[in-house]
Length: 254
Image (cartoon, rainbow, N blue to C red):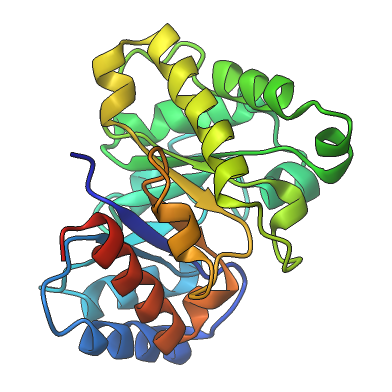
């Protein structure tokens, strides 16, 4: 059985002090052992302090991005070599990186390879925008992103995939559970074609896009959805805890 996962992407929010307080409050709220993998993804500046604050906690730490080179004259960038030891996961290919910073599938592929080299677990994000969705191109776009992003990658044992329809990110318009599950089933079938049924069935695929405590149940009750990549709601301790507990109740055997 795939262990469900709830990952919080804080994006460009919280200063250093706020980040530490947030994870301490979250950890205190999870005073019981939860059968869900919980990941907090703060900004780069807070990774070290958040990691230290969560020593001994069941909450894991993720970075929001990384560069595809180990080191060098790349002002402002952060490498997998720098992240190793500070976090266990790294979000790659998020729609905001693709849209605002013009990241391509080829760039994402290079980042995944580098993350795997340093034993970081990639959370690969894929998803279509509103225009593509309305044109009926969801399958075409997601298929291209999966195939190109994983080009040349031989093992996916530690990979997590997040399906994030761009039209549902930060808009309050979440996809329905059935719609999200159909696309995530497609992703799993693509992974099976490229790797194996065993590998595809073992990979966790999350839904992301306006996930809240009110709608998480609709998603994690679906057969192929293994949790959520949560944006704004992950900055609210009580709501994030509610998302985690609902996931545990529906998918974690609690």
